Length: 462
Image (cartoon, rainbow, N blue to C red; front, side, top):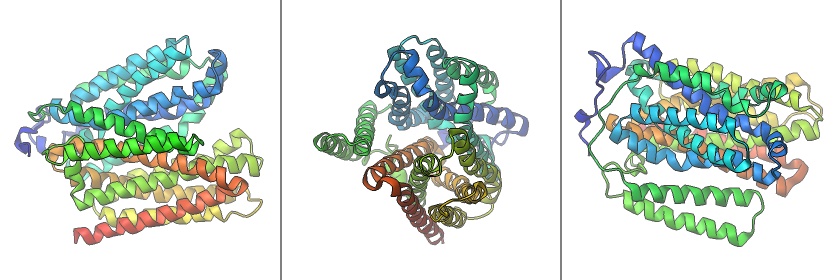
């Protein structure tokens, strides 16, 4: 195991092992949340503009989807490799390089004149976003003292929820007054501010070991094939192609795990997955985000196609969910510093499951108030769960393996979201008009299972 003593902060003051001093801590978290805000915002902001981009660049609808897919795929395949690199080179270095790459790529996106150049720029932007996302959890662990760590993680959770909620609104506002190029140019001012504040980030010397390039390549192929198989099943690709991708993903995944097992600090953190609290927390994260995405994908179709609401009304009716999640995140962070993540997460997921069940049982002609308060119940439950769960994932790992834990946070989120979106698409193919109700019932069941798993953590810690 790498020597934990070698893993130290070099500019954090006299109590380096337990966070930064207050003024430096504030600037450090500003850098983190600005970069996280931009990377999450860019996951949602381009979706709204796809028809406009396709028309402006004379591209097909299918081709324009790669503006979104290229970004997400680059992030997913690079999260764990860059988290591992952060343990070796230092989290600050990986974060700053990611931020610089993201900023340059945003400028390239804003200047793109063809679908090919825009897609390539989005790949580069995804590389930068992966650098930001892969190590932000580790940085927060060393920015905040342990007794305030929940608050720091809560701050990041608030930013993620607000960015996800504002994405479509920001995109619509920009497109109302400017071209789609400004969707990406808008990143430049906050990126420059984040770079200016980056001097406050904690430094760590890392550990002396080689970067495992073969494992990084296996990881990229595994997640690439897995995502293509899930997405292909959701969109009705040929059975032979889907089966080939799934079998390929399984074979590469087995090879990857076998390569990781004898290693003391593997790129795919199988050592951390041997820690029951860590594994249970990752499992609840995957399930919760799958349930969330099932609802997120299904509800707009219900609101527009069944209830006849406009796009604007749909956006307004969906917004209370992420805003309530964000509002709960800071309170949940304070509670997470005092109470068990198993209890808080279990209660939160039980409330979340109840909210989903309430949405599934909406009356035939619900009022806006009927919908809004149910959305808020979902947001309340999800917000109460998310921050304590993220704190449990980060603190379950020893300090020298904070990178592996940090990389698993967004990996679990993206895996859950991808699975949930694919399940929603499959349900629409199978159940047509009843798909939304079925999706919400399934989401409630998944959230209820996740709640039960969360409560198991209480027993595990006892």
